[in-house]
Image (cartoon, rainbow, N blue to C red):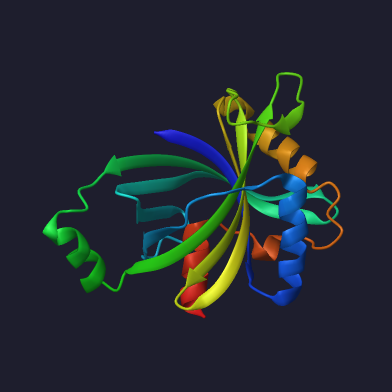
Length: 206
């Protein structure tokens, strides 16, 4: 079991946002990640549980605690959730693997182009970028993602804190405020803040 604390925002892709994201990427030193395809299992869970297949693994996550809406600063508020995650290796060469994905409309394909920046949080609550050569017990990933779901383009900004379970909330707050402290081009509001399971539920209801 792997505990994380997360906050995410989702937006429909637009030309005005593209200009903002280019500036955002340059300022935050994001690193491009390999493109990937995730398959989410759609079922009515009200966003409290997520099941997906990605890169040869079955991943299950359960929302253990919902902190509701957190105000980070005057322009940034979001839904903070505490997740427990489990991951299991699966055999993609099994003849039944692709049959399950193809024959069941409950599997939703989500294509992702991700950029990632990792932050470390020290014991004296200092926040700085974590290099590939460094190790830290307390880390917060900042992930900027271009999403394609059923031929619709979206983008997402997410923060994921992990490490010492007792410090997850404080670390998430510190990194969000550090990263979005000078956020003058775009506000991040609670109306656009969801975990992936809830966002997919809402997307399919439209």
